[in-house]
Image (cartoon, rainbow, N blue to C red; front, top):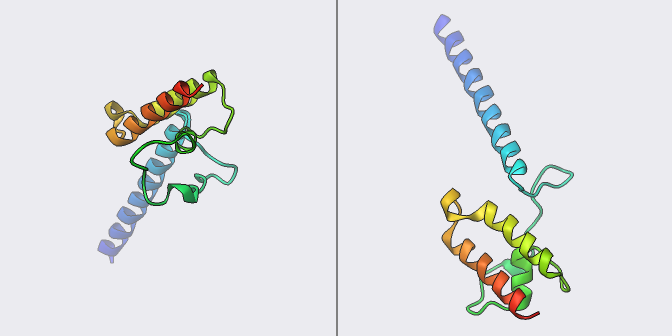
Length: 113
């Protein structure tokens, strides 16, 4: 009887610890510039992203990568680039492929102005 009570207490303790860890991770992501909606979840990815990247980066894809709309200013492009690189830089655990695509998107958008 005592063994099952101890086992139950251990399971409950682990559940509370895991919940606390997940909440801390969630808060740190938002503090680092992560995107959070009013419902508390990340927005859906547009259908245009299905299937990966194109071989040659086009302006429309570059705008989607940086989360911008047509007509974005140089300052908006630079700001979006900084924000995306903060979240996806390889030195902080991000993907090298994504960082490359983010840099390429910035170059495409700034060179076409």
